[in-house]
Image: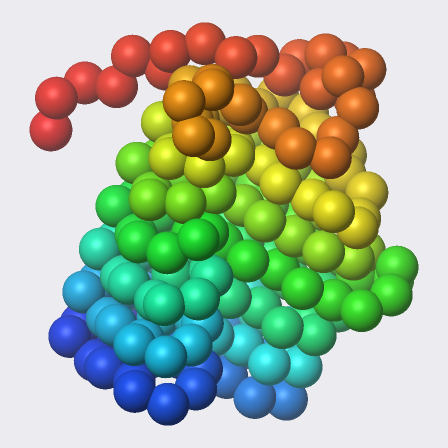
Amino acid sequence: GIYDNIITRNENHSGYGAGIYCYDSKPEIRRNRIMCNRNRDGHGAGIYCYNSDPDIEQNIIHNNRSSGGGSAIHLLESKQARIMHNLIYDNKSASAVLLYHQGTDGDFQIVSNTICGNQGDAVKYFGGTCYFQNNIIVQNHGYGIFTLDGTAQLAYNDVWANIKGKDTTDYYGLSGEMIKNNGNISRDPCFGKP
């Protein structure tokens, strides 16, 4: 596992990953501070996993930048992933968290995270089922949750004030009934000043 590290100021100029790169593995990535990493020509500046099933828990992931998507976390061809109890903020790219799996058998759990103030979409995913529970996804500069190809189960999330262009848009590609059920809200979480 990758535990209790400060991973900062790494750069990649050709491909994927900058801070952490995982290939064909089941990594446990816990209690790290992953910040100020940069991928100039690809995806996944903070964490990039290919064909891997990671547990990403209790990390602070901020101020990472990638030219593609997934500035904080990019998972490509993961079949299972747990993204839990992370603080993900101020990352810069088309999306902070990008999950991509070909087919419908992917299983992604996104639970009890705070994802705020990122430059692009908060979470963008393609393929499989994504479970969102107890997350605060607010004030990102793209969509809150975006999918073109995938299903979702949502419960007890606060998705609020995410902006795409000049329109406030929290969801893309999900039905209104799915969002209204199971305790989901769209309200200011009233963060305190740090």
